[in-house]
Length: 513
Ligand SMILES: [Zn+2]
Ligand SMILES: [Zn+2]
Ligand SMILES: [Zn+2]
Picture 1 (cartoon, rainbow, N blue to C red):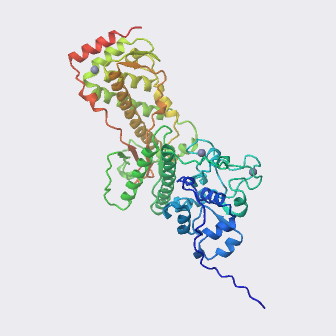
Picture 2: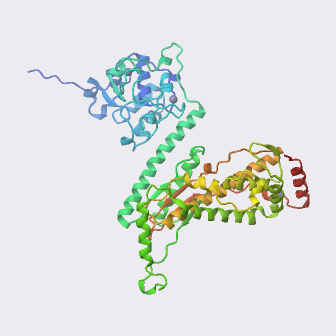
Picture 3: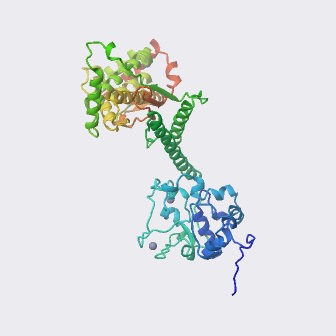
């Protein structure tokens, strides 16, 4: 009997491999890297497996005989040899594997290729495309493909013989997915700085998602242990910078971690505002004011009615509550911020008696402009003079803001707590929107003109928030908010004296209907 022994002999890295440094684009996936390598060297999947599969993995011979390796996972690969072949540091080779980049992405990523056609046409593919959460290419804003355009089949995200037989072609119908590479002067996509930022922010966001999920799991564990905790975040605003949102969320998570170990947070918390909802002390039945019969009973009815109204519009009580907050903010601004410019405001509002939408006028006292425009947007009022007319019945801007937002609280929380949370978030957005108006007005003042854009949409005023706690004694609801940024300092330096008012009135006089 003859026994064939196959020795898994040490194989030195080939020195004759061909590679073009300009074909390495950075932030790319192992998939793109391996296929480009296969294309330049015209080698089969077996040969690539022979070159790159690690001897230490223990299954090198089987793998090389019939390679079928998940390209999200680096464990079977020899990173050192790959680094040598691609002439990049091992750290960068690791980053081409999704599970190295995002270690907890297993169930949240696809084992079939997900790609952007525009990127793939020029040989670019990044591991984050494999995340099912990523639905569009951060560079081209195109929806990612999951099936071949021509034959409708999915393409395995693996190192396999059939995929290397014709690199960057559909293995089923052979359609060419990267015509840009076939030319002698191939135009390989190398992300430009702006595109690198977009890709980088997407990775940061995905990492944050992982962390948030972990923090949530930790909170859920606490729910079971101590009956504590919920953690709900606002979504990143569409126009806001992702990095600002990430900064906010990470800070909240850090704060919660510190709170958990009862240590002092060492972070600078100036950008975070924290509000805790006071809970009424659990009253003993004997101590109760006889006038308040069975308040706990009342509370239960309230909670029960909550569950019946899940999904319904949240109605008038909430609108009333938010309107009260709006009026309080308005009073606060009038008293403490407008101060020396109250007469400027009144003079300007009296002067502008018509609808100013889309008009361009001379500028006037910026504090007055900011306040008038801020009120116009929240009150849904197009004519400045009406601001000081008969009291309005409804503030349409406020109404729009409330009705366009889903409730941030779990529906089983008590109504008063839900209102309290919304009130806090609203107050923050409301104050922040005044700062924006003031900054705009200071700019207009410098330019000398105001363009009264027709549709200010207060709906847009988003703020970052996080809600945690359980709305029960011992674990009250806590709201975290990003602190409103300070008002432009120059606005406070404005003299409010006679000279200022004279200039203001002269400027107003040039505005005629
Ligand atoms: Zn793309
Ligand atoms: Zn196909
Ligand atoms: Zn003024």
